[in-house]
Length: 303
Length: 85
Image (cartoon, rainbow over all chains, first blue to last red; front, side):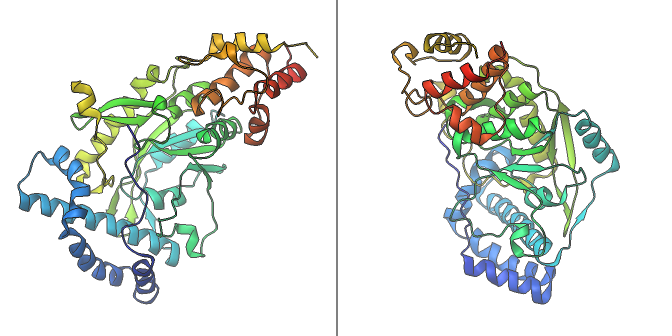
């Protein structure tokens, strides 16, 4: 499947600056107040709602027009709040992580096995803030991330109040970032990847069932983990309330070396997708893939 | 230094990489491994595994990987100069 998603911001740079100004002068709730109106203005535009429909239809069945509109509004509002919370974190430094000691102990124990650690998460909940704040293990942290030119939303550290504590590996760089990931894991670093979006060659994708229909997810990380024997933690970061988020570890495992063929790692990709499905059941309005991630796959299956 | 021919390298790659649709026999030393041969990011990982398993050679970082994986000849030369078995 071709990469049919885009990392471009919907709102302009100017609109983002208005929110940053409101946060600086009036705080989080002042920005939330404007957000309700901004979200409504997006939700009434069919072209924006259509971006969310593929997920809404898979998650909520085929709701009527009004309930679909309502689902869209709630989804957009939740996403907007996540972006405001991220900016509040960057500008005012205010964030609260409710992750349990049990989660922290698990990650620490896995990391202490001496083979680095891989976090696989997805575009849901407060993933962007979490990348910067979930840093209780003292190790170099890398995130596989491609910043597109049209993405004008600032990252937490770009507001200038926090030191950048993560390094980025470009998935569109040389060898899709794979050599770099392998190299840093061999140096016992932590690597964080998004397990729900594909990049580049279709050869590296695995077809799995998500919300009753087939999607493709990236498979390379499972092959890398099988080589380095680095433990994988499937983790999501649901927002619990304004500015507070939790960690939700739904699985952890070590990948068996099944050779070079990427489809041999399907069982591990399924573990991720099952966890993601569990997340969407618990937090239906915190799944932020606003594109048709199923496009082409069902047709392919029928063929 | 253990002498290593281009044919030896090709043989090892054929045995260890998924090279469906790739005619490795028609390549020369100057053939670029990735742009020319059509290898991709996953093949890059497998190349690293092959180097470790067959020759006990480690690729330490991205910079070294880029240098070694330029062409068949750069790969062959690196193997010849660094192999421990």
